[in-house]
Picture 1 (cartoon, one colour):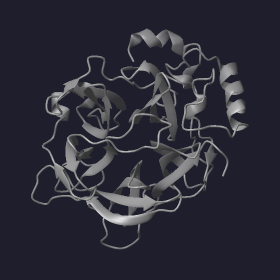
Picture 2: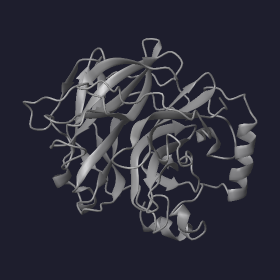
Picture 3: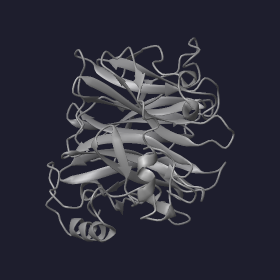
Picture 4: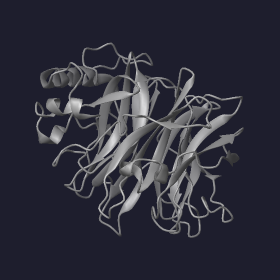
Length: 371
């Protein structure tokens, strides 16, 4: 975000960080929120409202998990599931998700007809014990799709094939080691051909030397944009979000303004993590949904807006807040994936309830209209 935004932070207090709302005052945000809650006329076209956040709000939680660990010992997802990526293909909704089996991460596929009831279809990307990069982990939470937030979330092809981005940790265990990012190609969403890593932490700046996390791949004109979060190398690390670009999917250049989305000041919702970007076009603006982890120990779904996909300003508003103690998402509601359907916006996220090491990690959803 850079120092240019720091002066604006003072207008919203410590919790807002360096955020401001692109021409909307706090009073306008509240009025716009009330107008949205009372309207059922939303369509696939972005709502035309003064409030730039209105088209992005999903205040109504389902309140339960739609996918959780299978509980089947030995299955790739038997302990927990994480990192949803929801899209439409072949007339149905699909979800890529990350499963954890106690050894490492792998990527699964589930399908649905209503975005609430999901059927597991099995592994989509499996680790390769003969590959030093993916022998323990491979997690994909991004396939190239339509950019519009209020689109149907249909996949787009490159040279007739689906294109996904993945990241992999080099060691066994839960996010152990400095992860890298690569690409993968498929004809059927089940069989994927992986490339060699395209981004490595050691090639980046200090803010990403500890490892690279979830990539978000989009196409903008004739350029590919790969948003990703990364961590510092100290034990109590910080995470921020950056961007790499390419025209040929082979040579990638980190953006000179990285990290594009930085941690807020002490006490802000994102003072430790500003992570897991999900970038969409909303009318003539761009929206980056992300989660913030605060020093209060809670993770929340947040938003930043921009006039282009290269410059974002944080919105001083929580999109999805953790639930009360005992809820499926207390203390974490994080890692966004969004899709529109029949005039409603669905916001999927990883919900974590309980305390380590006995927490339950699964996937839940909130939407723009009450259930």
